[in-house]
Length: 441
Image (cartoon, rainbow, N blue to C red; front, side):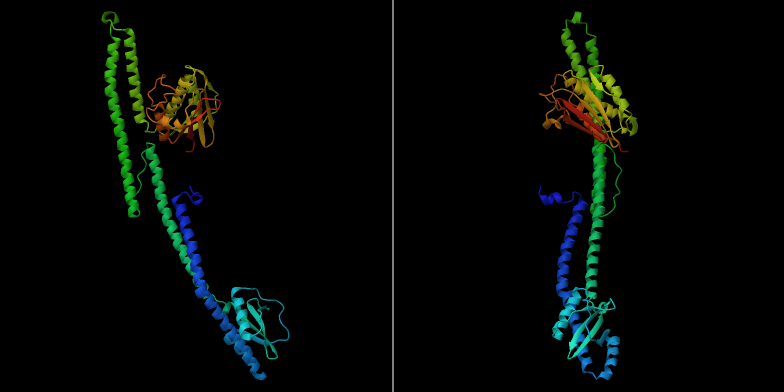
């Protein structure tokens, strides 16, 4: 994965927003550069040159007029052209603040007047002033900065940028709606994977979204029907198989070994085989029903673990330290089966060592741990053991019995309730099996 890819947001909305904003910034930069060079700057230069020409002409005209008419000319300049002109004896001390348009005016004035002219600060902060030498006269001219500054092209650029920004925002809103719909589909798909029946999504919006939502709703119904048919099928097979198995066990129990000459060891092995077949059928039926989540009632996880530790302690040493109440929601029967499978495996493969059962109950999550001192499970096979009928022939052996469905059933039960199961190596040797139960309601 490249560095650029890692910097991208992970969500559809985030990536779309980043792409649109990047394209918007690049487009605006190019558009602003073009508009500035071809529209704003030429107009500003023309406006500054016109103002400079007007000021230089006014100054030269004032010098050429008879003294008795100069006052009337000054009044006319003020009313008609918003220019103030008067003869002065000394120059203003402070320069006006630099800026794009003032710099253009200074350059145009200096070029037309043939002398270095600087804009000055006067008594009115909205006016700019300058001194221009005409013949033997030093004239001061002032003009309203706001009246002569170029505003229309800049306003047009602002409107252009605003329109582009609104376009991007509109696109983001539309993408946000699509990403929310896809997020809902993803959340409901997870519920389907956990064996739940999610609420049907309304088939509204654009045609493509309507088609996608309709297809998803049909898929939900088909998956639920498939799961129900599988459960019914396996239930029927279980019932049909258990009936002849029961008859066989009954027939074996009625054999008179002294009269038939049947080997007692052979009868015992046959009874064990029938019992194993019966257990396998029961495990397969439980596996088929594992996706049906229990009602989410509140119960005490600590109390349940204490009961299970006491029961498991009758078959082998179990270390359990009683904990304060830890209330969780979900299927208590499912949690019992998962932890029971952990305890059975720990006792079966733990080499007779003490099995440790512990509980960590935090605000957001409760963690149940079952630890043994057996051979453990190789890291590359810790996910494979959750597949139905998968068994580790070398590391944990087959001699202990079992159908190979225990962990598969545990995983499906955990998924059905939104829990997690993790397997890890125990420090000092052995295996640590964890059940993580969310306490968020």
